[in-house]
Image 1 (tube, one colour):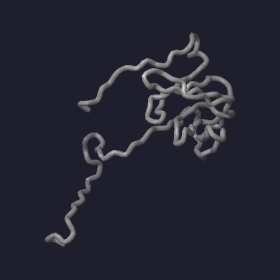
Image 2 (tube, helix red, strand yellow; image 1 turned 90 degrees about the vertical axis):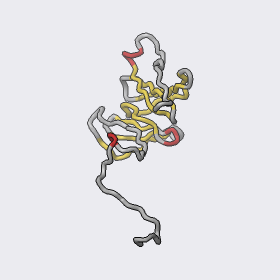
Image 3 (tube, helix red, strand yellow; image 1 turned 120 degrees about the vertical axis):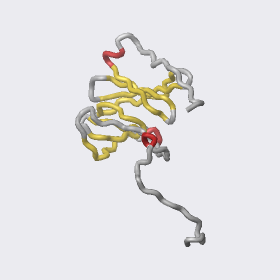
Image 4 (cartoon, one colour; image 1 turned 30 degrees about the horizontal axis):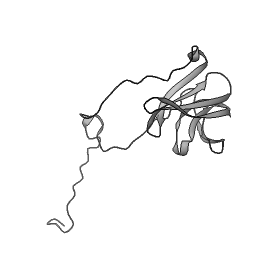
Length: 143
């Protein structure tokens, strides 16, 4: 962490009254800091995707997706996890504009997508398993 640098970044700039009519959420978009903007009301949602690369840049919009409440995060190939109006987890494919129900149901507003990266670093600085595995070369004195 010695070489890590931290700084503050401005949020995207929006018009007066924006916060009354729209939500925005920060998320990871292909390794970049992204923001997704969508209306608070209505069952026909549109989403604007912005990324921070020196300044906030609008990458693209997803127009008129019926039956969804809110975005949860991105998956491979630009697919977008969404929470449906029926509180189900769905995957939106922007190339086909299709929604695929993934078979998960939750209470409204409780679904979240969390990025996971495998690591060999122990949690809280300690080994979680008390097992020790000893490795010896094949053909050594004890083999």
